[in-house]
Length: 226
Image (cartoon, rainbow, N blue to C red; front, side, top):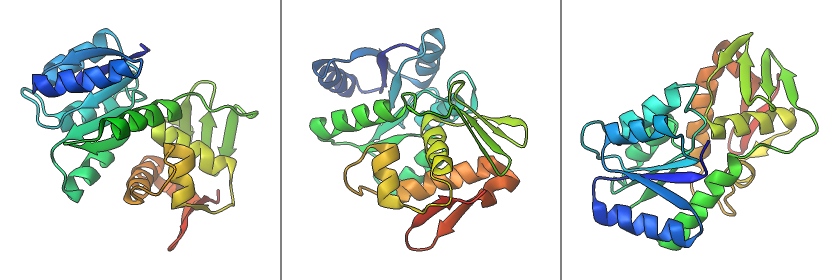
């Protein structure tokens, strides 16, 4: 996987602005201006992260995200949606399709770079003594970055993988939403606890009948009980 960041937006001034701040922060940048171009760029040379606008010509940003997250070759590539669509439903749809973060235009360049660094940081391998975590029919293989549920391989995003591994590692102990936002997303403050709930819902869907292993502690957070 490349160490570059792919910026996808059909407004060239936005592409230039985002690229400027990313390069100023020390990142290398590739760009694309439409949906088909974004998918072609990712397949040609998978980037370390994709900054993706929603309203794109050819193929929408949502469909680009859906396509990337549905493939085992690209599911682990983090995606940050950068869009003018600020409604809560838009955020929820983005997260449900597998986006790792959601930034609304106009944005603070400093906050944007902090979010980029946080997403990249949580996508890195998790340092731990145990490469294998297994409980309740769910197996997490850290060395291969794979999740197996009932002996069937399940495609997870980088965030979903880290979230599941953390819950299994702390099996039986309740993890608050704020704690999960800090340890999985790298946020120092509770920016949006809906982020945790949306990712948890997607993760449970992928676990299928084993989803009961993740227990909701009403008004507080979650724990793995398998």
